[in-house]
Image (cartoon, rainbow, N blue to C red; front, side, top):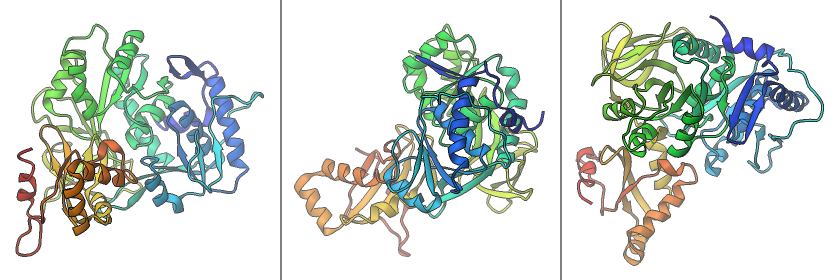
Length: 454
């Protein structure tokens, strides 16, 4: 099996292929072709090469994505559409493809449900476009990660090779966004290439999930550890009469109890995918026992840095065949099988969204009420961020006058200029100074101890 995605993009969908659906609408291959051709015409008439693509509806997102790739454009996918985040990227793109107004001063092409009146043929590609995603680098600044269609095709083809036997005539629904690499691959590109219809909406509530599992005999659920860990309780920890054929989880390791909770409700543990925006998928596992090892995907090689245990890998999803170091510490059990032992940098996952602690601290430190800040990843009662802030004189006066809650809300509003609400710190501390040793370095244990009591 080779070039599954390129083959599909070259020919386009069959007219009767079901592309996407929701509770009130379906999109067939014929309608999808007209929509893609209409956007492709507008893109082909523009000399602009770099197009930011942002859209909540996955079917319209797929229209913009296919049209841009077929037109040989560079597709810029922002991690979110927060004003501060987009302003940081404004020099990275020329124009916008979206279903809503974004970025004043930038010309945009509107994604709409309405079809053009005339029948249009699927565009013929003369040069493939590429995709650029942005993720938090170690410096805290957005880091561009470029993916060629060849790289994406290699991953989509390998996913189909690895998991197709578990997906009999499946439709795909998702609780995660297509704006990130996981949702992009699993919710949009892989289903398109394998002719599996996908839900155009994001599933936000357990009731919606139950509705679709009751409606479809075969369903593939794309989700994340944060959402799956809460799901068993939402399902009353009861075995469901109708369950997804397959559940995928990615964005961070799923804890063992949550995996067993899903198995109790749905009959089988989720398949977890380990990887990153830079690397693509590295390995997968099903947690049938504690400390379950990860199995690498076909053609992915892993090794362990003898100095600090860091994961190094070679992969067909990378732009070259050289070894790439990752900031994940591993225990290599045998070739192709390893256990994860935490991160070696200051990038953490909050609600499966990658957050640079450096970037968030820098934004907090820029506030006039803040003298110095420190973020601490907490694990209890569940994974979340705690923040310790040494206030300026003005900040201390405001704390005395208006109280802690007022300051919390003020800083949350400040952070929302660059970060999504679900990633914000949940616990706040305001000591006079941050604990430091004689060398002026923060004492991590004392920072963490500040959250031992509420």
